[in-house]
Image 1: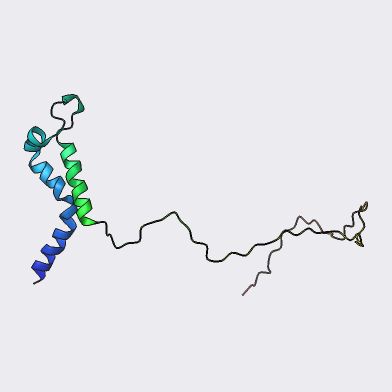
Image 2: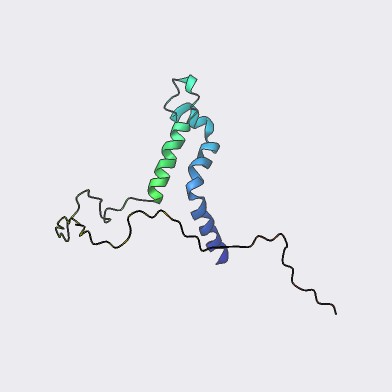
Length: 124
């Protein structure tokens, strides 16, 4: 039972790699027969075009596009709308703060010291 389960898990993980393995195994056949650019040797395609198509098919089958998902629509619905009027602030001219302060009050002071505080050492 464990062996069958192990083989199934390995097969699921290796499924996206199968087109590459098939390309490596059948390289001569793909490059000579299935290559779309075999008449253009300057491109040096060697069947890579076929490999890309197979990888695209494998990715599409792995992640199919579901039709039940909601499609994106650029139309937006307005759920609530409340018109806001413009307001103008009027100064009453009753401000008690002086308009021009010419003196600067500095009540902050500090002491510059060059010594560094060390906690006391305990001798035992």
